[in-house]
Structure formats: structure tokens, C-alpha cells
Length: 364
Image (spheres, rainbow, N blue to C red):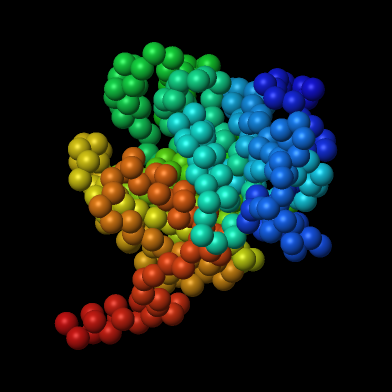
């Protein structure tokens, strides 16, 4: 047992690694899948493939005054499999882990094309209440470029008080907005969570993918700007607030931390998506936000920058609002970063946007 950790599952050293059932045969056994389709079930009810149970770990962080609930789902495997696998880390695990686990199984076993196996890791808080971490995520995703949201944090707290089991920071509600805890949360992921997962599971260390939605997407964008090599792939669904009351907070962050230093990202994939109807929700009017408009501004800025080593994929998902687009972005995003989904849209060579804008202004 690791110090500061309890586990609701049993970590079995011989149960790591897999190839997806009935999709991709194991190396050296090209006919294994075909044979399994016609084989009689083995005695004792044991099939060729099995689904390992979800394992849950409670990890106490030394960087955040918080215990995190970590859920791990491995794909189906044969009991003799030992292949190393990529890992997809998702935030807001209390809300989406179970849903994303089933989506992952569908992609890997019922898809129309071979889909690679991966380990799914959900990062959440110690509760079975789906929205228990609604306030804690405000602390953890709040980066140094964000404004001081004291009043907004209190209003959010009031709106969530209707949920029984809501969790608050151990060191007081003021930490919701004052701490700007993205750096500490990033330290937890980089220095505690990832080493734990790599130690206890057969992972591909450079095969990590991050998925985050809304505030979790904003945290992912901050991570890309500050420690980009932490993940190979970034899937950012409807990422956070790009601006607030006229202040271009995330635009300044991307310019100062990513574009102006001319960071070379060495083969990082970035998938970003938005639902066309997100600004129609009353919450965004109340928050003085124009998420869809700012999304197009941000993606245009990233395209125009021509960042070396960044493979940028943009998707606009029609007729979807902020919450309902969440699982769609996960399905599309993992397909995109694993190279199994082609995204449409216009392609502009680096710098073309500046030349077009300059030419237009000169004709005025």
C-alpha cells in the first residue's frame, strides 16, 4: 500500500496491458480474432477476453489540501496480455468517468474501425455524488491569469447548495477563488498522480492524453502553455472562459506563455471543440461571456501563430449546448488524437491571417 492511499480494488501485476477484443489481434497472432469468433466457450465460463474491474484509489496530495478520488478503467484483455498502453486522463471524474468508461468500451469493441486500447483515468473527489466537486474544481482549475472571482464563487456556491454532499476546500471557502490553484493541481497531476499510475499500471509514459471540459478545458489550455510536454495529446472541450468583462485573460496567457517564447512542442496534438448553441444558455449571458465567439478568436490566433510541433485540430459541433456537447467531444476527441477521425474546416498557412488583415486594412 502506498502512503496516503487506499484502494477499493486490487492491483494485480499480471493483469496489465491488452489489445482490444475482436478488433486488433495480438502481435504475432494475426488469426487470433478470427479463431475466437468460431471457438466454443472454454469450460468454467472463462472467455478469451475479460474486462478488469474498475479500481478506485484515494490519493492525498502534498501540493493541494485535498484527497482525490482516482478511478482507473482498463480495456478488455486476455489474461496473458502484458502490452503497455497509453493513458487518457479526464477531469471532473465524479460526473463523467462512468459514462466515458462505457464510451471507451464502445469505441474499442463496437466501432467500425480498429481502435487502440487505452487506460482511462478519472480525476475526481472523494464522493459518489456526481456534483460533489463542483466548488473544488473552481479552486483547482483557476489559473493565475484568471480574475479574482470572489463574488462569482459565492454565487456559484449558492446555486450548488441545493445538492446534498457538496464538498468545500478544507481551508475555507475563500480558497475557491483566491488560491488560483491550477499550478498546485498541475503539480499533483505531474508529480503524484502520473508517477502513481505509471508505477502501478503497464503504461506508455509518453503516451498520455488529457481531456477536460469547460473549466477543465481551460486548465488543459493553461497546462499546454506552462508544461506542454506533460501530455502528448490535449482534448479541450468548450475550454473555460477566454475573456471576462472585456479582459482577454486567456488570450494574454497564450501569447505570453506559448506564442511569444516560441516554444517548440515536439509533436503535441491539440483538439479543441465547441458547440454552436453554447452562448444561448442563460448562464453565459449572466457571466458576461461569449464562449463561441471567443473560441473562434482563440483558434484563429493559434492557427496564425504556426506553433512549431503543434498539430491543431478544430471541430465545431452543431446544435449542441455546453453540457450536452461534453460526451460528444470526448468521443470525437479521442478518435482525432489517435488518428482515426478526419476533421474538416479551412486550412490557412502560418502567417496568412496577418497578411490578409494587413492587406484589408491598407485598402480602407
